[in-house]
Length: 303
Ligand code: NAD
Image 1 (cartoon, rainbow, N blue to C red):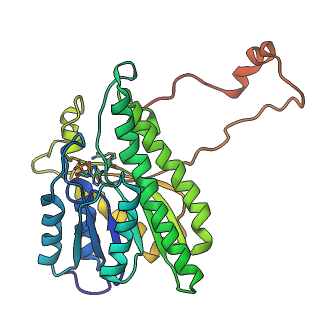
Image 2 (image 1 turned 90 degrees about the vertical axis):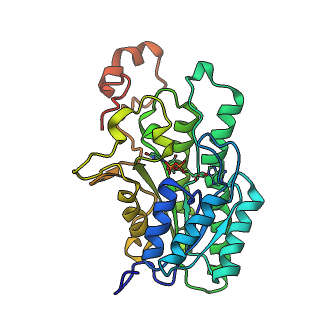
């Protein structure tokens, strides 16, 4: 274990979906900085089917082998009561909860015109609803603690995606869920500020089974021999560690992306331009003057 002052010493974190991929990397990085971890993972296949205990158990073993402390949780984030049990587990096992990392998820990609109701529902449920359930119970816990007079430095760190920010083709379910998580992040930032809790979202990009199983992502995620492995999931986790720490106290309601060596901030939605005529518009007037609002064609996906 690292010596000296660790950024998350004494803190307790739940990380959903931390049996594999980015979540596993966050769990190892947070444990190395002194946090005790509830390693939640349902252990299913890349498309969300099935379940297994192996992935969460293995990460707990890895953390313990490093000299850290962790406990496995095999619940699904899509179960409201199970999300409460995760918070209860952190408190009963480690005495408190400081950090909720919402990371669990899977893909069921289709073009809108081919997508089934089940594909839509499953992806909205695991990302948007799952993030809400876990955040909801964590917020209730922190509010109670605040009311009881206990000092709180709570953190919610949720996971968005470039697919949501840019509106990726073939991912109507996933993109909608991810941008919805961006909205939840701003709501939680405002609702929980007075209780000593911040909420932020990360926008990662890394080589995991999610990206390698997705058709069309091609070579950009491949390991480059002899060069900086920019798509290694470990490159994302330092941002999660930082946001979870006391050093990030003044960052709230924000979306930050990290991919390889690039640390990037995204502007929150903001009013771009106003033409106020002080009375009702006619459609003809809108047609005449719409150009004054600038270029309104389909936004670019370039990043
Ligand atoms: P991954 O498939 O390696 O990991 C996701 C984990 O979530 C798996 O271990 C899986 O078992 C778990 N999980 C799935 N459903 C669950 C449920 N109902 N309850 C509990 N656990 C569940 O994929 P990843 O790339 O590490 O994805 C992690 C997060 O990062 C996801 O939210 C994903 O959308 C997001 N993300 C990833 C990338 C990327 O480039 N990899 C980009 C943008 C966003």
